[in-house]
Amino acid sequence: MNTFKAIFTLPLRAVNRIKRDRFFRRFVNVDKRSFIGRDGIGKDCVLEGDERIVVGRDTFIGGGSELLAYKNHFERPLDSKLIIGSHVRITARCRITCAGTIRIGDDALFGPDVFITDHNHGMDPEAPGGYSPQDITIRDVTIEEGVWIGQRACILPGVTIGAHSIIGVNSVVTHDIPPFSIAVGSPARVIKRWSRERKRWESV
Image (cartoon, rainbow, N blue to C red; front, side, top):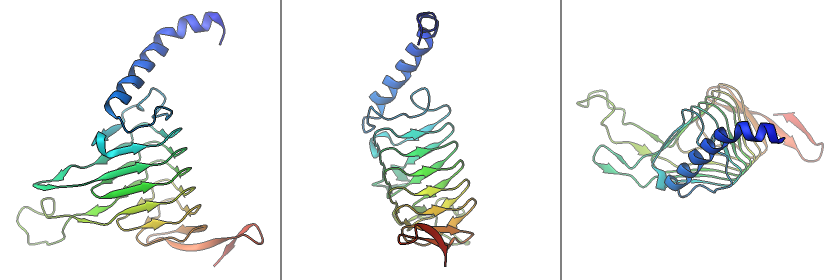
């Protein structure tokens, strides 16, 4: 950076540093080597349940994303924990809602508008007050290292996605996906697996 540019960008860099410092003072479980958006927290990002969110180093969370680790559901206290590894790239407008435990491994890549949840409302259509106040069911979600989740994919409660797998665009994952697999559709099904011998994806 030349001297002229450094002088005129100093105010902007100072503001960005303040934002970043404020973020780390609030979210103490975030590694200071992470990149939570361009300006420290990502434009229009929402993070709820700060002491329950752990983010590894060199991780990026894009603008408009929501990371929510709930403390309670109506009168029921929740022991939620959202754990995101290192070198994770979560792009714009992703929403992760956590009532139990969601773990995202190192080097994961999320396309825009991905949705991940580990819980669901009760489904009694005759219960007073509708579905919202009904007790929730919680089933932990694990996304292992090196997974790539395509744009607008939905990952539902109780799912484990194996290491280095790929989830196609608009897919809805309702059951476990083995490692080194490509899964697409609603519900998602495995269509290819990586052959270590031939070094290529092969249809199944």
